[in-house]
Length: 558
Image (cartoon, rainbow, N blue to C red; front, side):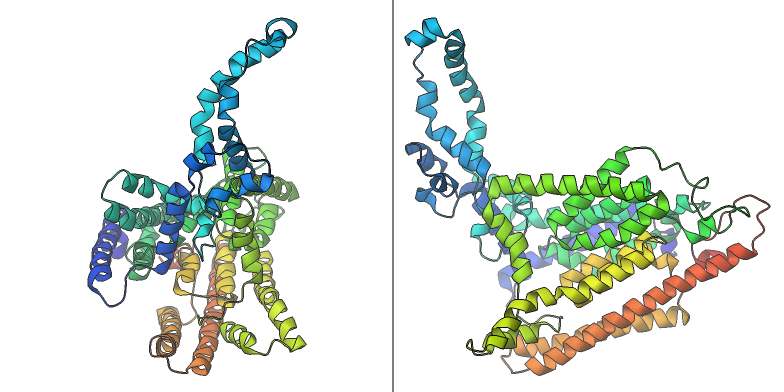
C-alpha cells in the first residue's frame, strides 16, 4: 500500500496508538527509570494549576473585617502571594468581607420608609442581588496565583486549562492518575486537532488553485508521516509539553485567515487573460465583504500572541498577504481587530492576575539572560557575563543590553522574510519566518522545533529540490547530525560535569549553521517550484480562460 492510499482516519489511529504507547511507557519510566520521562515543564504547569485552583484561603479572607488598604485586598495579609492580584479578585474580596453589611441593611430607617422610596427599594434588592452573585464573588476572591510556582512564565490561561484535573483530584477521583495524565491527554488531543487543521489548510489551498482533487487526499500522508506518526512530535506532547496547544492556535489563525483572505498564488494568476492586471479579482471569491472568518482570524491571531509572544512576527507576512489578497483596507481591518482583541484578552487577564502576569510573561522575556546551555550560541556569552567582576562598568552595560540585543537578528531576519514572501505564499512565509526565529532565538530547545514542524506538511508539496530527493535527505541528515553533535557535548557538561563549555558552544554554532543551510535551501526549493510552475503556466494555452495549474512540480510531472 502506498502512503498516499492511507486514509486520514488510519493516520489518526496510528498517531493515537503511538501516543498511548508512549504515555504507558512514560508512566513506567517515571516510576522505575533513573531519568524521568515527564518533562519538568509539566510539573510546572500542574503546580501552577494547583496553586490557581486551591491555594487562596477564601474562608480566612471572608472572616476578616473589610480591608482599609487597597494593597491588602490585592495581596491579602493572611495569604501573602497566594491569591490572584488583579482588580477583579480584589473587588470580590471586598464584597465578601462586606457580606454582613449587605445582608443586614436597616430597612426600618425613617429615610428608607418615608423620605426616599428608592433607598427602600435598594435595601430590599441589595441582599437579594448579593445572595445571587455570592458564588461568583467567592470564586473570584479565592482565585489563586499561578505565578507562585517558580519558573512559571506562561499565560494563566494554560494553568486554567489544567484546573479540571485539580478539581477531579480534589474530589477523590484517582488524584495521582488524573494529575499525571490529564494535561498530557489534553496535549495529545491538541496534536490530533493540529493534524485536522493541516488537512483542512491543504484542501483550502487546493481549492484556491482550482485543483481537480483535494490536496489532503494526495499529500495527506505528509501530515501522517511528519506529524501524527513522528516519534519526535509524539514524545513532546506525551512528556507534558503544551506546544501542541499553541499549534492549534497558530494553525487555526492561518486556516481562517486564508479562508477570509485567499492567498495569491502565482500559478493561479499567471494564466490570466492578456491585458489583465496582476490581481486575484475575478479569479477568487470577492474578498471585499465582512465575514465570520474576517473577525475570527485576527481574534485567533491575538490569542496566539497572548499565548506565546513570538507569533507577533507573523505580522510582517500578513501585511503583504492582505494587500495582495484585497487592499490596504484589509490591513487596517485585520490590524484593528487584532489589536482590539489582544488588548481585551491581555486586559482581562491582567484584571484577574495583576502585576505578576505582566512581570512573568512580558518583562521577564525582555530581560531574560539564559546562561543554561541550549542549542543557541547565546548561552555562553550570557554565562560569561555572569562571571565577570561586577565592578566592570562595561560588563554591567553588556549584561543589561544583551537580552535586548539578542532580539535584533531575529527581528531583522523574520521581518525581511515576511515582507519578501508574505504576498506570494503566506504558508511559506510563516514557515521560513519561524525557522529563522527559532534558529536565532536566545533560547533554543527541542520543543521549539515544533513551532516550524507543523508547517512542513503544508510546505512539502510546494518544494522542488535541484538535487531531488537526495538533496532533501542530505539536508535532513545534516540537521540531525548537528543536533547529535551538540547533544554529545551537552551530555558531558550536564550529566558528567565535564568542562565542555567551549565544545558545546562550538557545537551550537554548527547547529546554527545547519539551520541557516536548511532555511536557504528550502527557500531555494520553494522558489524553484514556483518558477517551474510559472514556466508551465506561460506555455499553457488558455484561449482567454483560466486553466487549472499544478500546485507543485510533482503534479506537473504526472
